Image 1 (cartoon, rainbow, N blue to C red):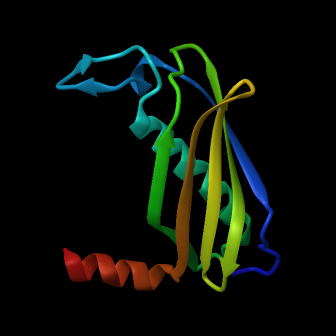
Image 2 (image 1 turned 180 degrees about the horizontal axis):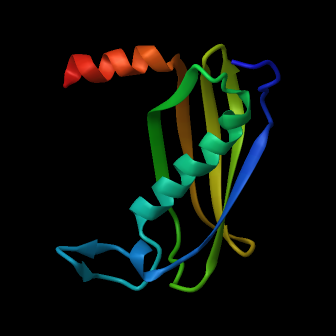
Length: 130
């Protein structure tokens, strides 16, 4: 990893909630609101943005943990701001605390953990489990 990744560094992702982000089962939208799986995805994206500037060309981040508390509904059309902040950096391991807001209202929170590995190691692992 490139030097400089430290506790407190942040990244932010802005997302306008669309119908494609609603909970749907067997193609049927259940509620016209931001789904928990979309929230989880955007938390992963925000945490990755914290790590991305510090990856060497031969490295990649790999998620090892995600916890999500979905606290409140966010209707289609609203904008969600997802903020990830590095809370631990330990060699190739980074932990981010992630928060999601609809305006000033906290709608989700969680923790995301990534580990940095050489790309060839990841390729080898994929082949091993193939």
